[in-house]
Image (cartoon, rainbow, N blue to C red; front, side, top):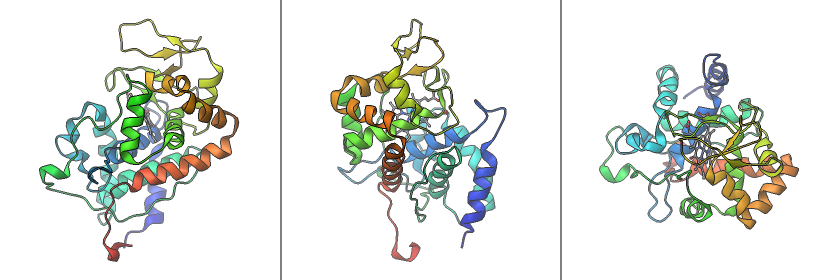
Amino acid sequence: MADWFALERDIKAMLKQPEWDDGSIGPVLVRLAWHASGTYSKKDNTGGSDGATMRHAPESTDGANAGLEKARAMLEPLKKKYPAVSRADLWTLAGVISIEAMGGPRTPWYPGRTDKEKPKAAEVPPNGRLPDASQGAPHIRDVFYRMGFNDRDIVALSGAHTLGRCHPDRSGFSGPWTNTPTRFSNQYFKLLVNEKWTKKKWDGPEQYEDPSGELMMLPTDMALMWDPKFKAVVEEYAEDKETFFKDFSAAFGKLLELGVKRSASKL
Ligand code: ZEM
């Protein structure tokens, strides 16, 4: 039996890292949990966090996962310390603990994922299942409907961009969404609604900036303001942090469960 309380404490204790980005590895661990899970397709019940398949090609080579090899490596010492815990459980739990430790809601999370050491080709999701930040609302809907989410879930999950930043060497985009990238809040929605966003003039991919030029939005973030159905939910979350926290925790909990197969004995 794994000592889950000790593991949670150890994850929390490793988040603060002064030399990393804004001083916490929490945001990149949230991105790892999301990318491990967001490959799910309800059409054929493939993809998702079970198996920890991001270690294997082609998933490991997906451009969308650039930089996440660092996040996976940071969790390896905990895999060594808690060998009974699968990497698939470790990666998803680390995202949950990070959000809570950064001031967000607790997400319901259940253990019991197993790792696929030598997956068959059909067990590793193909590249291209994660969203492309340069696209608009129809693409966002295609990708998240494929996972089984609705419009409200999409906006709630996108609120995770209150955390962290874009790295030119990983995605080509640059900068943080908020001035508090290690604090989970509804700040992302407040900024979307209240700031004036204009296209950044630079050589990089199309992205948007606030008047200070310090904060950024991806085209997919702006799409939440340009689509009337998404926009109504953005405005609601900008006004009501409690509702955002409740909806985020439910949607993130659902995301981490996608495609997870447990045998009865593991529950
Ligand atoms: Zn993100 N995300 N994401 N996201 N994401 C980035 C960073 C982070 C999209 C996307 O293309 C990008 C969700 C949804 C979507 C986080 C969490 C969640 C980056 C920057 C990009 C380009 C990567 C880099 O350069 O390091 C798109 C297109 C999305 C949907 C349309 C959802 C859902 C998330 C969690 C629930 C987080 C925390 C980061 C910050 C990572 C870091 O290292 O700071």
